[in-house]
Structure formats: C-alpha cells, structure tokens
Length: 387
Image (cartoon, rainbow, N blue to C red; front, top):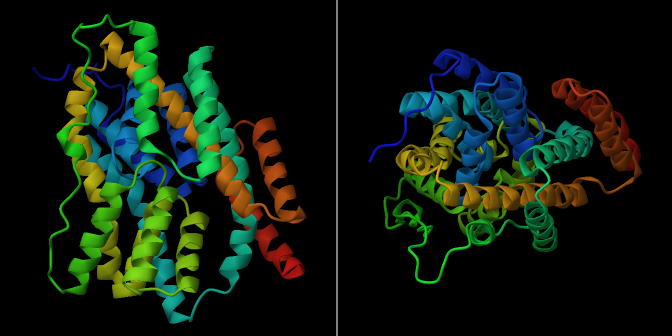
C-alpha cells in the first residue's frame, strides 16, 4: 500500500526553497522559534501546508532522532515534493547558517578568538528568550485548542523538561498512547494500532576503525545526529562529552564559544557542529561535521515519512499524533524556561528578555532579525559594565 497522494501544492519547489533560505538566513531563536515560524508562515500565512500535515511533521520530528527544526523542514519539504522537496528544503534551511558559522570559524582562528562574542551573546541570548517565549505561546494555543487532556500533557511535559533540563523521548510516545487510549477506548483483545518504534529508529552502528581525522569527525557527528532527540540544544551535552572529554579536539573555552556562535547566528542551533568541525579540521572538517549531523535525520525522514503519512488520517493515528504534539509543545515550552535560567542572570539581561517579549507581544510582525541586532548592540554596551 502506498502513501496517499497529497493535494496539488499551491507553490513551486523553488518557492519553498526560497522560503527556507530566508528562514535559515534570518530565523533567530533556536528550534522553539523556528518551528513556530514554520507554522506561522507556511500554515497560517501562505497556506502551503495544512495544519494536519504540520502536526504530523512536528510529531514525526519529535519521535525520530535528529535536530527538531531541521527535521521538520525536511518533512515539510517532503509533503508535496517528496524526496526532491525534502532535499531542497533541508539544504536551503541549513546552508545559510553553515556559511555564516564557517566564516566565523575562519575569523576565530585567524584572529585568536572572538572576545566580542561574549558581549554579543550576553544581549542576544536574553532577547532570544523573548523570541522563544512568544513562539512557544503561539505554538501551544494553535496546536492544543481547548482540549483539557492535551493541556494537561503540555503542563506535565513542561514541568518534566524544567526539572530534568532535558527532553525525554519516551514520554512523547507515552503521551501519544494516552490520548489514543482515552479517545479510541480500545477493547481488551482488540487489534490495537501498532505504535512500536520502527526499525529505522535502531541505533547506527559505530564499528568503524579508520584512523583518519575526517572519518572520525564524520562518525562522531553522525552518532550525534542519530542519537539525539528533540531540540538542537539537546545535542550540546553529547557534543561536550565527545569533543572536549573524549577526543580533546577543543578546550572548554573553545566549546563554549562554539555554542555561543550557534546561538548568535540564525538557523538551526545544531549548526554549532560545523563550527566545531572547522576548528578541528578547517573547511573539510566543517563540511563533514555538518553532513554527519544532518544526514541521519534526512535519511530517516525520506525512508519513514511515506509510512507515517500513509496512516496519518487514521483516527487512532490522529489521536496518537495529537498526544505527541501536546508533549512536544510542552517540552518546547519547558526548554524556554531552561534556557532562560542560563541566559537571564542579572538585571540587564532580565530587562532585555522582558522588553523583547513585550515588543513581540505588542507588535505581532516585528522583524526578529532587527530585534536580535538591537540586542547585540545593547549587549556590547552593557557587558563591560557588568563584567
């Protein structure tokens, strides 16, 4: 049985490519904001993607390994244009931030570090909290409606994410099962919908022993892309353990700078892998690291999306997807609080975060890049006064 044909798209493949190029160039705020922008633009604004397809994509991106925002972009590209669409959307989304990060990596090595980065990050990180908070609010209100069960799941996952400071993948599955049971009320002994993890979620084999540095980089970052679920920020602890502790490719200071680069540049946060790759092995290292990070989620999407979409209109699957969506949005909201606890640590950063939130709440279409630029300037002015 093949996947059902999607309705004829109201946009061309190249329009989709142009959109993701723009989002990858100007989309600040990390995965929380980026998935919100995709819904705002592609579902509500342009009406290229239906709300049902968006929810399926968000659910798929949460239960499949890989960085959330990039996985969703690849899935949405697949909806109408299949493998070519997934390829074009993924490349267009990642390429702008990759080029920016590679350029910063060159400057970092050429000039012996970037001392201004701490000041810029000081302001931008606080403003990003505001962008993320507004994105999470919009995502929750639009995705959950007035369903009390979905809001309860949302609250539970937000609390768990804040308490553990991590996203627990199996809770997404449990939320889907709970909503399916409540809505569908399966009878004992009846043939239940199989929701077991498919074969494509099996761990990638790590049994390679080629001593080449580029091969080591490729294998390590492929594992990172294959084993990490949820937002791009979830990859940071995994990267630290391998890059700093195990391989000793970077120092603690360089690793912190790498994460800061990802936060102050637009596009997916996980693009920090390209900066790390550049620091280790120049441009070839950056290319291999980025490819290793994003290739697993791309392959998983084009392999599994047809089956996921085939069952997408089944009432049991709809209930399951709604449960996962509620859990995902709750985890996203929780991650806003986690990031805020790390980025807002004094009066100036608190003021910046509140101002950014209020500004975006009052002016719905205020351009985020302009807000980030203003925050960067404020950070460079305030940082010397507080440190």
